[in-house]
Image 1 (cartoon, rainbow, N blue to C red):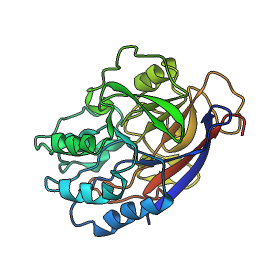
Image 2 (cartoon, helix red, strand yellow):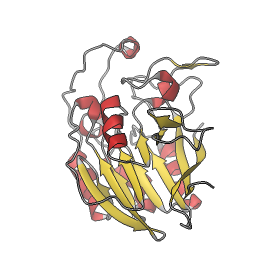
Image 3 (cartoon, rainbow, N blue to C red):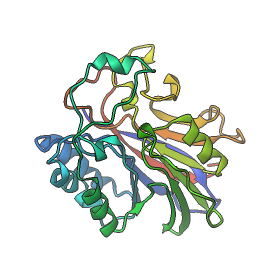
Image 4 (cartoon, helix red, strand yellow):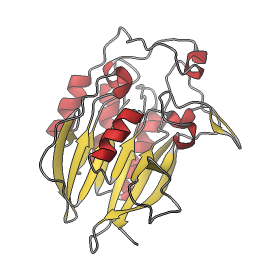
Length: 276
């Protein structure tokens, strides 16, 4: 039941052409998931101008060819990426109830995934590696500065030092939306922050929403378009708040392949001039 969410985000300067940004996160792909591969590939029909993936692409030691097959239609487009834990380490069986305990200790798995090969393929295609880095690109005539961090859930994040002056649009990119990272990107002047990791709660209750976010982000912002540190949708004139988009992602651990009241998703964000 994959679904494409659509949002309009007013973050561009006056007179700029709209930019269609495809946000893909948390595929957790195993090679046998041919339906997921086909669905992701078909997103190219939406003709995005920019593709950003916020990690957790692999869920199997032999998933690299499948991941590259899924992303193949996009690799000649402008793109950027950061990684999550399931780009570095394979998932392992665990008690699902651990996710319901926010203070459960983190454990680094034992089996490594080919993160280096995936990163090299993305970089060869021209995608920007934002793992604790800054970079920039131009899309449809708009100069974009970007800042990203490596996976905060594994404490791999190290916010990069101040760089050159920010451009017409400043994007922040992270896998896990921990408050320390959102705060740093907000203070850095990000117009829009992109994140994943939460799976939208994965198990949600109708009328209540996500039970947990698997990080210190509040449940009310487990997925969708919000503001940081305060509300943004519905109050477009609010100053001092950064747009935040959290993707509920496309997958799950293969050991807990269940989502409830939380469809797997990717998102198409149409960036438009402020005030539109």
